Image 1 (cartoon, rainbow, N blue to C red):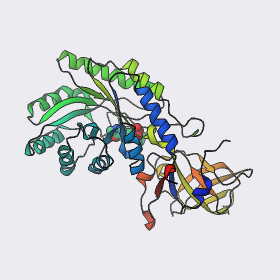
Image 2: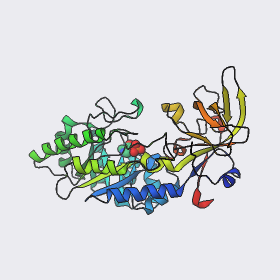
Image 3: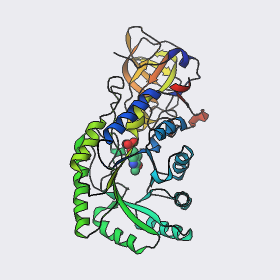
Image 4: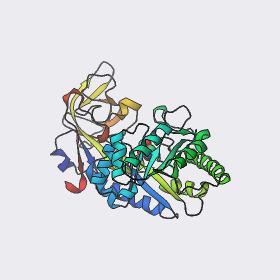
Length: 386
Ligand SMILES: *Cc1c(COP(=O)(O)O)cnc(C)c1O
């Protein structure tokens, strides 16, 4: 059973729990994305800030030339602060508040991804008040299912996201009546942790159908944005640290029929940052229960909520023990039965004081941390800085 590479002595000196980010894994991931997306004319990649907004992560991603995909005013602020160019910032969300829209307008962002007519009208009003014209794409709900956890599918007709396809022409017509709106694109996002390229292919087919309808009405958009959603291999962070970007981008290149001059935008979150991060936690106690052994650690669901929230699997390694394997439930200190990181997993023989690495935690980890139980938020350290 191979383990990840960790600078164990340096990590020993840091107060646990904390996030550790391997800058080399992140840079390699970004290089692969640029290489694979770069094979195709007009492909533009954004980073979905919501996966991880640690400034050190944002800086490396911005340096790789990615745009930013934001879902709140706070994320627009974070991306600007980290130096993402305004004209590479897109902003989506079902519930944009006025101050958030104003922030986007003041910064002349690339595009608002709009999810309803009432929202469109508010953006028009706020843009008029500033004497500006807002660039707008409509987020359509493609009614394409993704074979992933029910809580993270977003592209089904029953989900709250997006505008129904049958309303597409009406909303475009509405946009064309509004003086301070410029309609420039179509936006989609079908879910997260998607590993079946057939799901993205289904989205491509849908986009092609919708573009055919637009053609028949002589409507031409500047860009198509297909969102994010590419998954990672949580079971094999060492063997397969880089997601299959080749298959991902080539699926879109083969299946989605762009019109001349159109750009195709992607908003990858998880696939960019999940594998570079680990939550490092210290073993407090080994407790022998009636039927099993518990490794009680100092991290809990306030530090990494995915297992409690989605029953998500994260591989766990004891990075300070080479002893023969034993079987443990790895649990946190919080007074909730869901505060469990893994049940009945094999770890090298574990004792009080051992460091465990909870792997593939770079996405939706640190950023979702809370202070529940008056705990301190975990700090994220970049390998470059240790
Ligand atoms: C969450 C989200 C993404 C990123 O999803 P990943 O699964 O992390 O790639 C992209 N676009 C939108 C609109 C989102 O809400």
